Structure formats: C-alpha cells, structure tokens
Length: 339
Image 1 (cartoon, rainbow, N blue to C red):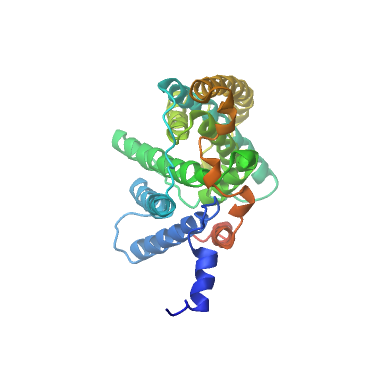
Image 2: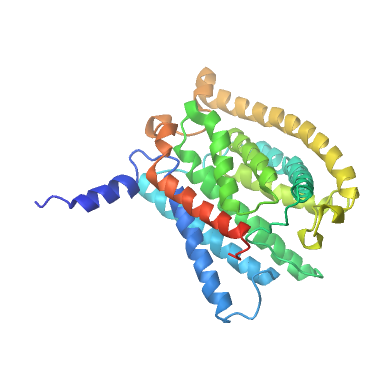
C-alpha cells in the first residue's frame, strides 16, 4: 500500500476534521463562506445583473441570506455529520424558552444604548461614520418592506448565528473551559458581524447568549432571545431608538433625546439581566437536579465532556486563518470599500 503524500498529511493535520472535535475548527469555514458571499455579491451587483442596490432592503436581504447560508448554515450541516455532534442540544422545558424570549428585552435596551453612546464618542473623537458591511436604507418603510426587513436582518441571521456559534462551536467546549467561552465566542461573533457601530452591544449580547445557551441547554434559547430582542425593539420604538447613521455627519447631529433615553435604558437592562440570570439559573438547576441528581452540576453545558477536546485545542491553524480573513474584511470596511 502506498503511503500518503507528505503534502496530503500536512493538509489533513492542519485542516482535517479534528478528532476529537474542537471549537475553533469551524471558524475558517465561516470565513470562507463569507468570502464566497462577498465575491458573488460583487459579481451580481457590479455586473448589472440585478436592478436593485446592495443598500436597498431587497439587496441587503439577498446578501444577508447568502452570508447566513454559506458562512454559517452549510458548515453547521456538514461538519456535525463528520464529527457526530449533536449541536441542537436537549429540550429543557417551555419555561426556559419563554424566559429566553423575554430576556430579549434587556438585550435590545443594551444594544440600542451602546450604539448611541459608542457612535457619539466615536464621532466626538473626530472620526467619521463607519457603516456596517451589510445595511439597508429605505426613506419610507411599507408593511411589506418591514416584514422583509425583519425576516432578513433578524430571524434568518439569528438562526444562523445560534446554529453556528451556539451549536457547532459550543459543542467543542468542555465544561471545565466554559468560562473562557464567554469571551472567545463573543469576540468571534463580533468579528463575523462586520458591524462597527454595534460592536459593544454585540459583545455584551454574545456574552448573554452564552449564558442563555448554558441554562436552556439548546440553541433555541439563544434564537428566541434574539427574536425577542427584535420584537421588543418594535414595541419600544419611539421610547428608545437606535441612532440612524445616515443622518449623521458630526457628533452635533445627534439629538440630546438619545442620551435621555439611553442612560436609563442601560440601568433598566442591568436590572433585567440580573433578574433573568436568576430565573434561568433556577430552571437550569431544577432540570439537572431532576435528571442527574446531585451530579447535575457536572453536566452544566449539556455536552458529553469525555468526547470533547480541551479548550486550548480550539486554537489551531484553521481558526487563525479564519480570523485573518475577517480582519482583512474589517480593514477594507474601514477604508470605505463596500463589501
């Protein structure tokens, strides 16, 4: 039998599916999927094949769907099949899912507040507005465009994020290393977002979703949390709003009303986070005590730790290449190159 070529051995060592699976392997595929999406969007829109622009509701929605599909959903479909992962988790009851949905209220409050404050500070320092890589603008919003916007900027991306970051990546984290995941996963989520104005809010949201994923035991908890955030954003519209980046040139263009609403919203969000953390923790403890008795604390993440590599095993070549690709996208975005 012929021995495999050295180049094949090297490729398999650095890019083959790790045994056992680790959390950092999938991020390279997210970066490659994002690259494919941006390349296809450039071909479609710059060639004139499509009659709408990338910043229209339809154009942005199309790119968002492609991004979610190629960068998040496809890796989440094919990688678990080769690694025998159960990324969906287990059902822990409707009470947990309802609380996860309601916890979307403080998520919206903190994201809106941080966006307003962060944008003001950024402009106050003499910088210019940095638009997200994917955003849409419509002078007048009809009911049909609002439904399309909710579907493409909230529901579909939320599903992809939860399946990939809190399903596929979460499956490669041991219970003993769980605390580190509360920082690494949010950082990678921020890299993937390509959304500078919402960066602080996305990081805080990523940390909270880790908590929801742990206590709910499945990916549907984080998904319902993000869905609830969009729902409460519609309910609270006019009470606290996110600043419209297209109306800003300097920091003086921001009305003072944003600050009057954002500061109390941060205080309220802190109180609500503490409340939901307590409630979700009680659901989590009760479920594990019923299933595992006094040994329930050993299964806090809901994963079989005997089959999952150490957290440090997630730092591999594939992860670093994925991070480098996204950093290149961020540099292009700051230089004003539309992605």
